[in-house]
Image 1 (cartoon, rainbow, N blue to C red):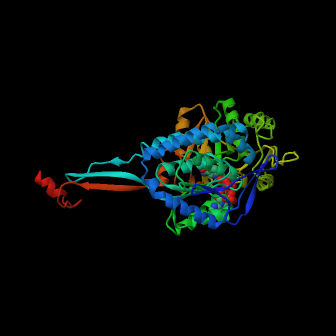
Image 2 (image 1 turned 60 degrees about the vertical axis):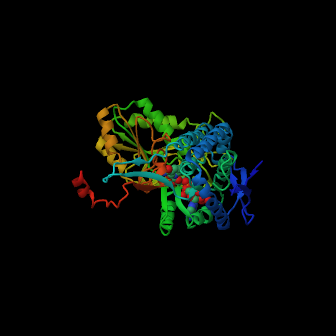
Image 3 (image 1 turned 180 degrees about the vertical axis):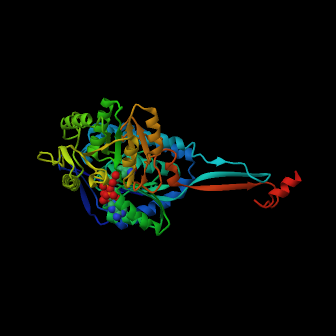
Length: 497
Ligand code: NAP
């Protein structure tokens, strides 16, 4: 039976003011998972007002107390891990083992950011005048707007909300319309952890109205967005009109480089996991394989043989390797890229068409070889189970191919040569680099994000996440009892000594 869920505004569970609803669909069975509010700008206004009213009391709550609530959030997420993971498989299709990993990331982030309640480190530095003290503190910003995609429906909202909250901000959160039920269940965790009313608000509804209203509300001081480059850039321009701080985490076109000396079996496992895990719908998914000529024929053959054996199906069955695409639109996009690849002269090794199933948005695992670096399938984000194999001669050539796309999120190299590994670390121009591991598998204590069209220089996770949700405040305390002029009186004071 489909669940009926509500927005959380000011601590109350409420319908959209218009009463309108929309359905969330299971991409494996095409059944309705939940009926959720189809909210609009009025609902956003109410949520922003609630977040604004809650801001000052929350900001004045000592950070260690805020951190303790985050520990409770981590505890509740741990208790609900299996239920949330099953709901995730139902609502967006990723297989159950990966859904559990998605929730685990939020648990890790809750405990990590809970600890920030007793850190939120600033710094002191020596000052140039006597009887004077200087320090730099992190300060909260105000109401923050969080807009997230469907592919990590618990993890990504946690990357944004937990650092925002521990730093003393209040939140208005809009989940993707493919995973609104999970967005509401995430909000329920905060509600049940007894976060004060209004500190965390969730509103479900279309990006064009709800997301746009959040971006254009002057009371929302920070926008943290993860999604497509096209939408991200357009809301960046909108938000600039108000001088808002914006964090963008956008698309990827990630590559694994395999050198002739690589550990062959390890590379095969990692490529399959990185290219076809989450049905290729990770921002860090491997969509290009850059392989040195000597190892290319054997690797290509092994990958095609193994890919054909991957089981497609409903991810609640633990034996399934690959779930469906998120919706019919995504399946059409993937198929259009397959046709583009064939038209460009790449050779289709396996897959290349919708899977033969009665229900669900399944697409066969697909591999092309004979791909040239400038083909569209090697340059544009497909966001599906499609891998393009590109041959190269040298390490330098491999790195150049890797770096030459509009995106810069994750890259990886397989080699047993330490010199090659360190040269790759130096020269791969992505925000994340892996050695002898695929392009997926980031941990929450390190910065997450990318260069070029993948973002705007901000990073999520780790200490860097706090930069999005805090302002630096420089504080000078002069206890000399007289006017001391920085840069001017320094020489005189030295003379006195
Ligand atoms: P999307 O279409 O850009 O949507 C992302 C979010 O923006 C959704 O909540 C969407 O709402 C909302 N939105 C749509 N139009 C809007 C508007 N005009 N104003 C404000 N918000 C608006 O992206 P997606 O298809 O959900 O996600 C896939 C993309 O996310 C891929 O490009 C992937 O690479 C990227 N991604 C990046 C990272 C990273 O960290 N770099 C991580 C994960 C995913 P609706 O759902 O209601 O349309």
